[in-house]
Length: 338
Image (cartoon, rainbow, N blue to C red):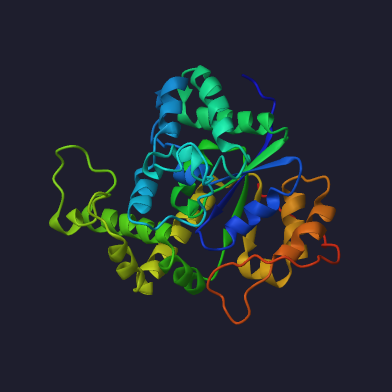
């Protein structure tokens, strides 16, 4: 199954820093497959070189996510979920295959149909390490959609930056960051990051993730109330009232990403800031497009830059509005790293 796809990139970010906006704008480039929330929400990870068959790999992708199922159950569906209201699982979202929550609906107007195609092809993948399965799947999606490159972006992927940089040493890396205080305020209002902060804090304090408890495993009393079957929307909202928790999460995520980048020294690295993107979108999108190898980087940046606009006097969450683009971006600075 050699797809011939050679060009690929990963956007590493803390989340709530404009990464979804970037992904949506990249989807407007005709040769680029913008893959959203795959590594963060869908793709399994392993510390070693665990070998899985294609059938076992597909089983992990087509199972529901415990995190998303919990948010569905308590009525805090993340706004990023794009599964259609008339889809096959629309009446039973807690059983929704995790790859269908965000990733496939962002790629196809018929995510169930694309899911069925993958269900036929992915089990035929050879037995191989997880990272090779991930690469083969993303290459397959790129081929099926008639694109020549893929760019993956998951909100909060800084948390798994060491894994991503080790597993994809030849990927172009975009590191997107934002002011921690602004990011923390936005995280405190978002159910996914309320849940992420809860899990990170639980691991740090008790050495236990409430969503990774083995059968019969002893759970500290302080963690019991946060187990998936007991967690409530009110608990998450209450935790969101303390912004200090999310400043700590930002610090942790940024340190994870920056240490991973320093250790891996990716061959091609582009660092971007949300504030710069808002201040001069044509220039920053031009830098991004040329870095990713777009032949039409100037026209693409010119065409989509008008979609970047910050809310007046509010720097809480990246906003997307549409305005007529104007001007041509300047050429970005040297983006290579050796």
